[in-house]
Length: 193
Image (cartoon, rainbow, N blue to C red; front, top):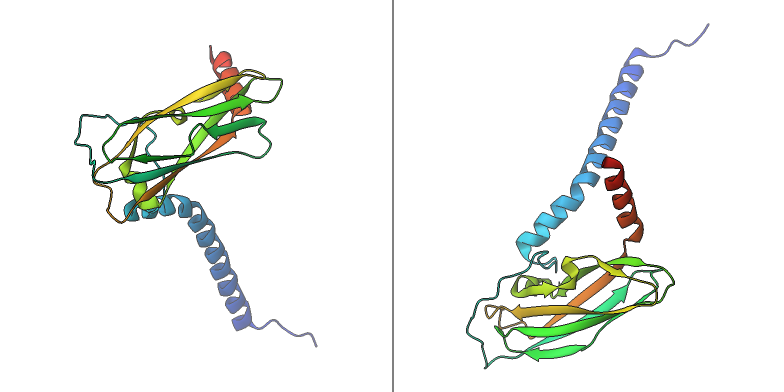
């Protein structure tokens, strides 16, 4: 005599499999939603350290001569990118509201053209909203021919509304090699013509 499958076990197994598949789909969807949710949460809480991707407009504002904020500059190059990239000045003491000019130095150490893109961040993250760039090399891609050098300008001001508890802002740039992306875009544009 053969054992007959138990009907309640089959229904129970199908229900369990359906719930597991539904759970996997929900986790997969949550994984995609996590990055935008993180960005929104950090922006609302002011902890992301991201600065604006567009130039701020500087209008004559009252410079707070009674307060000094130290601005530190850090630079790094992504792994495998043959560039030297550093701030000309590593640290400045500034008065909130004062327009400051500084420069970063870049050098292509390779024997070919490389296109770089700098991504900024400010620490502490709450200070990012008060760090305003009127001109920045990070707004544009940097094309550097083989073995060439460039001075990359940065003009900024610290908003006088910066919380009194913040005495130091650290501006960090990471430089990425986007040459292949740039080349692919140029080829795509050429094919569209």
